[in-house]
Picture 1 (cartoon, protein in one colour):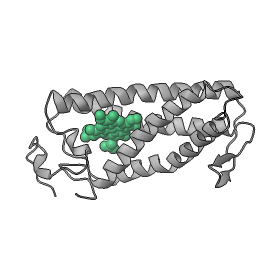
Picture 2 (picture 1 turned 60 degrees about the vertical axis):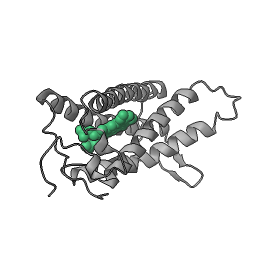
Picture 3 (picture 1 turned 90 degrees about the vertical axis):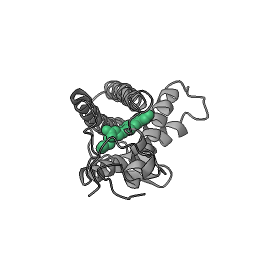
Picture 4 (picture 1 turned 135 degrees about the vertical axis):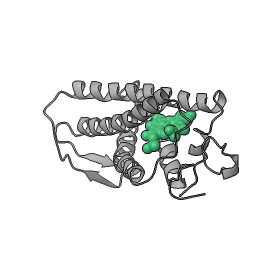
Length: 194
Ligand code: HEM
């Protein structure tokens, strides 16, 4: 497998970045949703938000790294796509990055309201670099709606990838999957790797 992205396929690093990001974002959504159902007497009342915040802090580093890695790599060829598919796929991918970043920033702002530092597991605390003078309820709602919108776009994006795989039978999804023999990837493009 190639480390870097090529004209035919995403490389190992991008595939790792993508699937870790997808799994963590979906997991964080489920955790955040469940957290809101906990009452004060739940044994997870303190620990669940701490885990949610700590993973959020790690993603603060991980998602920009994913984005910078992709900006420094080439895009696999998409000449097999129809014009409107290329346009919508491009917009949705950019929106996914933007929504993830907005979700992470709003989560950090929510955690640090009132100048409260954020705990990264039990390792160390990250101070409140920026504090905003807004109600926790409002910032919490903004964070929550970003999460809903991200999940909506991720669902559309995942459904589109499955449609390409099972209905159009092209290699859009295959090239974001690991351990594929390059021969398994259909020749939707005749371009050579450079
Ligand atoms: C929260 C969940 C997800 C997030 C945040 C996410 C995010 C992204 C992002 C940012 C890209 C663009 C990578 C780039 O080219 O720079 C991407 C590409 C891709 N994703 Fe996802 N993704 C998610 C879930 C899924 C799922 C569930 C599937 C499949 C069922 C999927 C399949 C793909 C494929 C095939 C590509 C490459 C598309 C292409 O070559 O045009 N993703 N994803």
